[in-house]
Length: 60
Image (tube, rainbow, N blue to C red; front, side, top):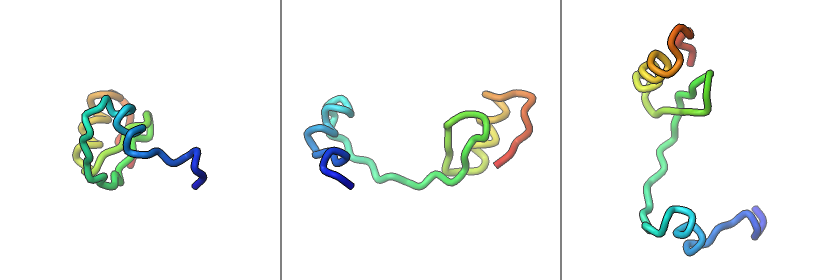
């Protein structure tokens, strides 16, 4: 990764709105096939597809 791609803490704080909040990133392994959303739990993905993409088959 080049220096241009790396963000220091001050830049991250500006981007995040200055809250300085750090969250542990969990890996999302269920991805919607119809939009860019992703979920940690299969049940959450199914619920999303049924509500946001009615009539589409549940594929994951």
